[in-house]
Image 1 (spheres, protein in one colour):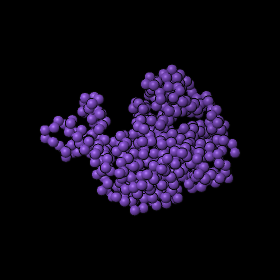
Image 2 (cartoon, rainbow, N blue to C red; image 1 turned 180 degrees about the vertical axis):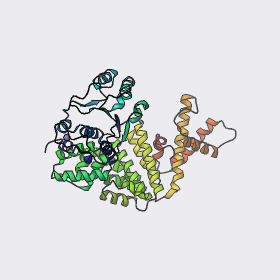
Image 3 (cartoon, rainbow, N blue to C red; image 1 turned 60 degrees about the horizontal axis):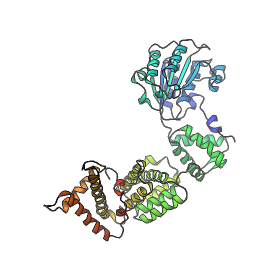
Image 4 (cartoon, rainbow, N blue to C red; image 1 turned 135 degrees about the vertical axis):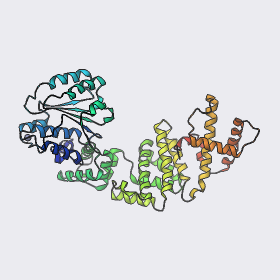
Length: 458
Ligand SMILES: [Zn+2]
């Protein structure tokens, strides 16, 4: 089987072939039926959900020799040539590479001439938000006085970047992300027709990796067939896409949920040895914890995208655990992920978050919470000291409100009436450090960047 077979074969050719965008295709069909055809359309939505495909189908519907008709015949010269991209009066323009005023002026000149083939002249401008301001102004002049039988179809992933003057002259259609259930059923069906079997785990991974974009899902399928042949299992998808296996995520989560921080760190080490990056691991872990949170809180609608075996795994991991417990852990790990994106050391951030999170373990309940908060306060004080000595400005730096509050609380507990504030803080730090040193499990304290791991409201 040759590469790209899916992407080519599965391109919708009629309105009824377009998946999960019935709200758009139905309205367009009605407009064609009742001969209320607009001069300008704006198709918005995420990439790969059918915007340009629908634009081409609309072009066929309008120029079909039996049309305008909502059901282009696919047999006539016009239908065939539009599908093949060789029809003179249907012009596809990439807004990203033709974004200047000259290109749009040129377009404006040519739009004045009647369609060479006698039907509608249709301009499909993809990524229209990329046009310059001058180009938009030139475009606006055509839209204000549109030549007869000239139709513009603009496609964009970023409608906010399209000027209001343009928007107000377009009929707007918002395309939606394709739900996993619809995409999965479609892919399974079509793959079956090609003699390809794909197991439920693999199907669910493909749908999730696509992010709701059919184009991405199809390109993953193409790669999978080249990689794994005609029988596709979840493992192949994980390997191909570098996805972290759900089993590993469940083991790490389980360790953290049950206060086994060291086990969690060992699992991280194993994952790194197996070739995952910290970034891949932490993003996958945040996604998994989110699913655990939904399961723990009983809001299971959001996890129906997963395969049955993954749902069982999540339910097993979260059994007997409260949603608040999962939420606290998710906040810590999510905070660490954000810090890594902002440039913090990936490994230290993840490890510190996992160890801190494991302090919330159900084996200890929340009585462990004070020592964690204390550690946070120590780091907050240290951070403030550092910031003060470096910038001489107590308000400068990165100490969030809640951190500052902890500092105040810790300071006031040990306050001596005559002492100077800065000296007091140093004393508090030393005092807490001393008591902390007596504690055995002090990994948290050793990591000076700990405070960075705690999310804003965590
Ligand atoms: Zn036709």
